[in-house]
Length: 321
Image (cartoon, rainbow, N blue to C red; front, side, top):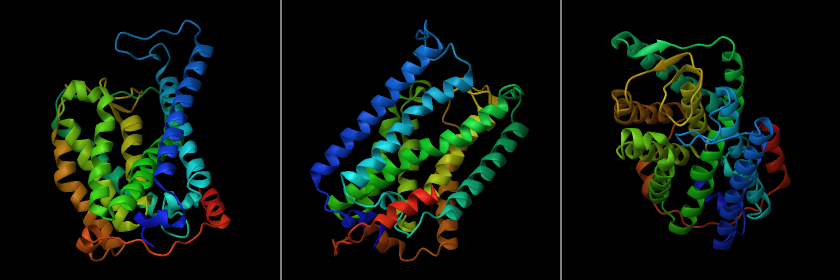
């Protein structure tokens, strides 16, 4: 059974998707409320800064924890909803395989992180007075620990919601993978509208988010799971937290390097969309032997016999994760 057809393992309907959407939203609300309570407990005189940051008076590591915590609640709400509302295995949200493939996850993570490091080296070598050493020895090790724990959760929450639950739900309605890929990619891009990058760079940055969402959707469909996309996404965000930061992106850290160039839709973003992501599709396709790409993307997936969920499938995900 294809990843897009995992809904066949349940008896879900339109109402279950509405209910799950509400539960995930409530998970985010509870997460944000819990985060604010924690912030007020740490700083009773908490106030919002001029740029709208409610956690500006905390050190950067504490800010990062507070920003990331709501994603933990959202992911937990989504997983519980899959199990008890959709009544299908939690594993089916992440992959069509019998268990989560960590080798795929770390392969994508390692390849993308390596390319990002190469692009950083080129940036440092070719730019003058733009990228500076920024490492703070007193905070860096804690930053690494926080990033390695929370960013995989944050990116797993986004991938599971967009390329898992929403992707499968749209697939159930339209029976065409390309529509699921396109729609989830657009929604993924638009959901980044609140990021400060939009104000700084302009609406053109939406193209980066939307096309990246489409790229991740293609990977999820052709590979029958989220492992590659989750690894890629986690590497991207950990790099932006630990290795290279700036003073205008969504979160600020004491990363190893800081880019002081003004906000722009730079060569690195264009290179990623035009060359690197298509190249990734070829590499992944070769390594994992993806076949009949055009058929896989554009054929109609008709509903087949339902496979009832099993307790073991949920246990496998807990064991693997």
